[in-house]
Length: 314
Ligand code: PMV
Image (cartoon, rainbow, N blue to C red; front, side):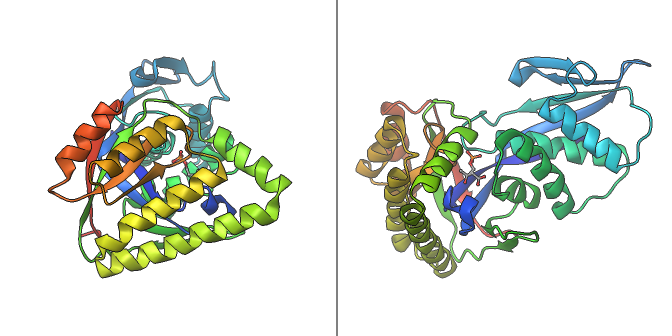
């Protein structure tokens, strides 16, 4: 039984999305986590094999590992009484702790693989809900945007409500556009900047509420620019979002080096994407500028540069 799930990036609105503002997220269909379920020896129980994470473990020896807990929750939901004898093999080309949704993609691929192994047809909303529970164990207060964009595999508008259902809408994109994704190579676990933003918000709520409102304003304008195919408007909005993320306190020198290099080489706009303090940045490019921006990112220290063409779902 095989299943996979894409990585993702956030176009705009990260962090503010945790506080009920909207954000736009994009699935990365070419960068995926994959899970295969194969029969194990009788009595072996559930064994996870994740060479890309450098790990192999038995569910019984690490029952509180987030992926073990996720698997136990799924088996419970499916009404499975007896622990099956299976190996869950996990591979992924999504770099971990880089703002590309590696954790949520692996969890989503596990949910999908177990669903097909047990002949269940889960909707995107059901997959997303199971993964959200698992993300909560990792992160504390995830907004839910990662599991949503990965389960739906569409460019989405996401706004968290105090109670589900959250607002999830496919986004209209009049003209495809191209983003380069530059990896700083600095690994940063999302919960750290998310926790720091929470402490700062608790100390000075009015300042942070104002910053989050300013981010929301950018996200509304970005949605309009995408619907109108107005790439000239989108670039400066990404720059404005970056300036706000710097004020919120989640940028870093490595991210800013790549962002500055991309802009100098002709990108229409650039910003960090995801939790920040490391991980990836994105740059809006045109066919004529893509190559020089890619080279500038590499020269400025990007450990990897990916390209994605963003378009509305077929
Ligand atoms: O998982 P990351 O690093 O892409 O970050 C997710 C985006 C945040 O807004 C920072 C956190 C969240 O839960 O929405």
